[in-house]
Image (tube, rainbow, N blue to C red; front, side):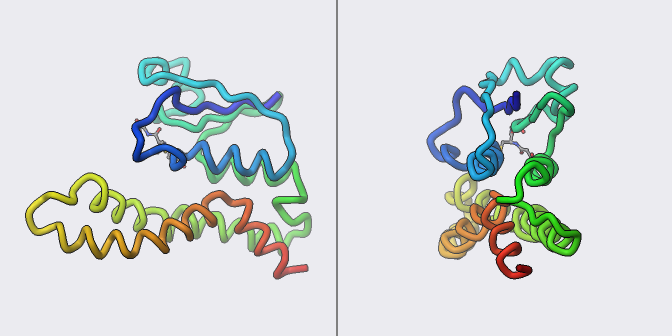
Length: 163
Ligand SMILES: N[C@@H](CCC(=O)N[C@@H](CS)C(=O)NCC(=O)O)C(=O)O
């Protein structure tokens, strides 16, 4: 049975944005059964949890064969279990992998910077204007991130374009 970890509580601004979402989304798209283990802040600190997720974060993933961390690696692993998510041919897989890297490496860090400005630093002197620009940007950026990082939709676009 697949088990993933998620937080038992997050503040309002984070609801629906925590990275277990993309894993749940992929599992739902793939039609795979899974359980969610909810963890508290204290429960993610000990070595037993860090053996699953070395940075004491969520999501962590376990199935009968493997324990994984890093949402992108988890998505690729789930993708290999379902042709609904990941093309079965080598070319399609390579292109889908490029999209996953793009989402995590080329898009997410910049969106996270904007989120930082928008959510956490909006009131700081000199950063209001950046915050406003960030807000405008993040409306479209969030859509890209939520679509691309969830993997499933990115993979669907890729698989459509290669078939
Ligand atoms: N690169 C990791 C990032 C994981 C991550 O940042 N998780 C956040 C939730 S979205 C977390 O657990 N933050 C709490 C912390 O770092 O203590 C992944 O994609 O899985």
